[in-house]
Image (cartoon, rainbow, N blue to C red; front, side):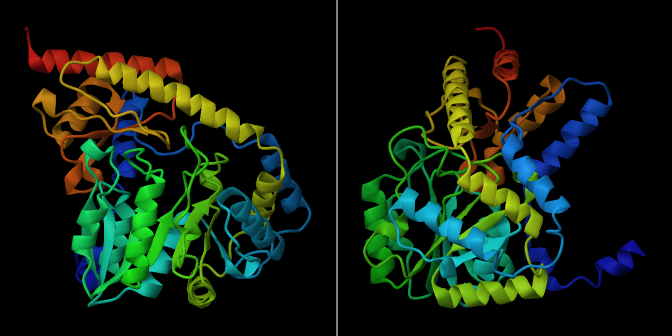
Length: 397
């Protein structure tokens, strides 16, 4: 029965990738079921609880009858609140009509890519970068073109190199700042140069700004603020990272009206709408006290410093200090091990779940991704285990 069904799958399913973090989580849970102690640094989600006032708003919404269908693009008051928040935080001028609310950030990514690219088109994406970028470009039938992010540039893309990748077939550019998995942040000069290229070559830019509130240095700058970019930029953001709401599934995109119409049609044809009760919780998150956001950001800053300093003290490992998000992306080439072999051994033999850099693209070879979304005590214990493994692998010196 299984073999018969496998033979009936559409060919496009072979182009669809996955997210390795969930595969590693399953393996880590299996070890825990055997009685092993595992420190989880694989999953990219805050380890904090959703703020109490947001939970109460969601519960009140369910008790108050917010249990039916709603508008496919989102509740009007939430769309207005999102536009207001983005305008205040980025200096943009979006209207509620530019907003589409979706069940998470991934649907915005999925629908925008499906709406824009097809066979014969090219889309440029960051490597190492969030793996779903490439997966969705491939699934849509377009050609995925990686722009390498290199350690010597603190994992900021090289604009000259980007210019060399653009062809007449290039239709979409994806940028992510602060970035997953590297924590790299594009500088204003980088963004200004990217904007000039986008305008010159008539590119649409998907700006993944999901970590915009988790920036440790300076002020977040959005591509949409540069001349000519408001009409060609899609801002992807959401509630998962900022308000510890990963399981609520609530994200949004801000985009030009023709794309709003296209993405809304994809919403109608797929999920109908986003849970209206969850949207009430999102409205409370945006309009309520923001102390919780500042507290999480400061906790992640402390953890970043703890992890980066600890990694840099281990022979054979070096780590650039990330400027945003909640990841560390250490270089492990000095250990002599490949990324996947290192990550597999670290989990199986030492009980620390991480991701190989290659889970984020070919240019991730030689690196690991560690999520700092864990307690300082567990992070310190993980550092001890990593050092134990490295020293055991290296042997006596």
